[in-house]
Image (cartoon, rainbow, N blue to C red; front, side, top):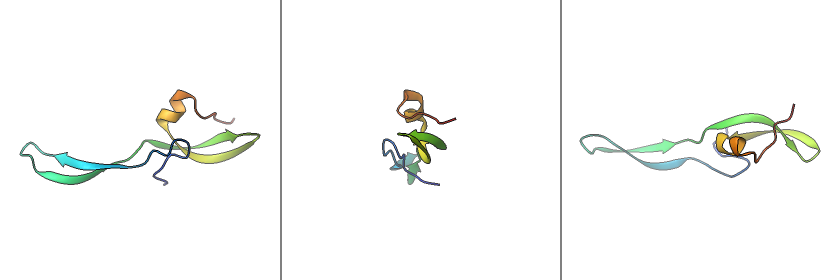
Length: 63
């Protein structure tokens, strides 16, 4: 699965998972992506879209 939103370009973020004893381990947070059929002008195409773009109305789902 793609790890980057085709609309806004949001990708994985990196950082540390911090335990109660403050042990640090590397961690990646993935964006919540969905594979959707969207309208691209007059044509339809499949794209990976994050749920934030979907909820804000930046893309239009095709029927």
